[in-house]
Image 1 (cartoon, rainbow, N blue to C red):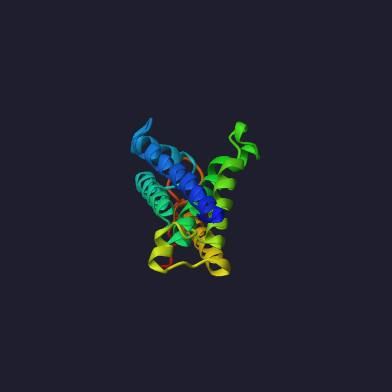
Image 2: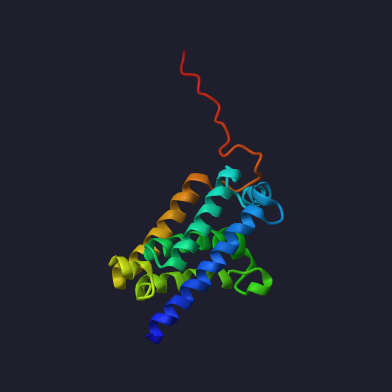
Length: 179
């Protein structure tokens, strides 16, 4: 067995397992979906329940796909996307270090996901078995590009900082156009 392929499999298992654990925790842990939805809304994301389910599906789905080594660049993009949202909304205000709730940890997961996009999943993967490996610049561009684009679209569509019970945008008084 090639040591590089074994190392890539171990990276996929570690990141994939971590992402599954994240997703299950958002779904079944502590406050369950309702608690996750409330936390997301407190970060400024609207439609908290939808956000919570999207996060759960993305985290568990990306984790399973990474473990299997299936559509690896797209799975990596899922990791990049959720970790970038977490870094920007939950961890950025706290600085770098994870022991201060900073963005160190989520950045490492995102970078490793991009690296897996660039390297590909290795030969111990379904991508390899099916002959659908996209790696190198293409795999890295998909992992990073789709993850960043997904984050940008999500934030543009739903990020409205302020209290969750406030309207997303204040209503403007209608102009009286009649003379």
